[in-house]
Image (tube, rainbow, N blue to C red; front, side, top):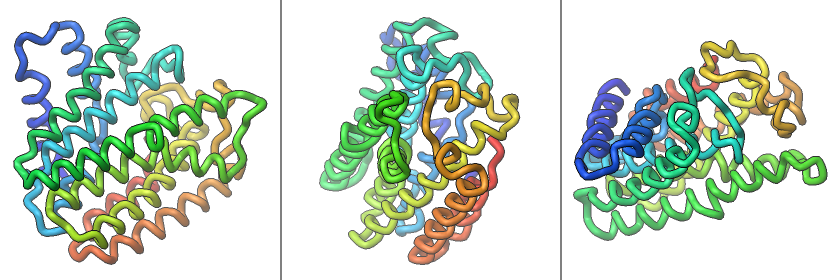
Length: 287
């Protein structure tokens, strides 16, 4: 994982500094948010699945960077006053607080655009790159991450509060979809089979559900300094979460079940023990 992180950070640094003509303020905002201390879970999954499927992880770096650029753009936009209105992210002022709302909006737009540029530069067979762009654009679009964010906003309306099934659909789009793209792009980079592509996507779904439930729990129980942002924001925004519907104990049990399913899916990938350890650690994280 440390090797993956070093490679990802070096590649992101190169991407964000390679165009000297970029207006400096928006580039500063992009760099600030990308290097604000994220865990890099998603791009690491891209490299991990590439390696598990017999590929060279370095060939998947453009895909991994595209994933992280989209992850960062989504967080910048989520924090805006018109969305979740969060002043802090990872213990630092949110992008719109460090700069301003207009710059934050442009920085997010630029990161999304740059993600596709990164994918296009992968030195892989063209058909793999095209397939990666197709999967990526679908899972981060209106039937994936963007659709999930819209459902999340609608869920704040007292007249449209979600039940458990609706909440699961919301999480599948808002949280799981980008994780699915992360894992499946790694399989594609390695030239993996359709069976591996399907298993990677299902693993990411189970992992994403567990991840979101733990996020819901941490919003109630975490130390704000460790979490890097105030706790209780879900309740303050009137959001329905797994904790709202199941209670802390019920939500914890649900996260355990999803994690167990994720671990069972990794049995299909020889050499996945490090990824199993990461999966367990994400269940028991405290930030």
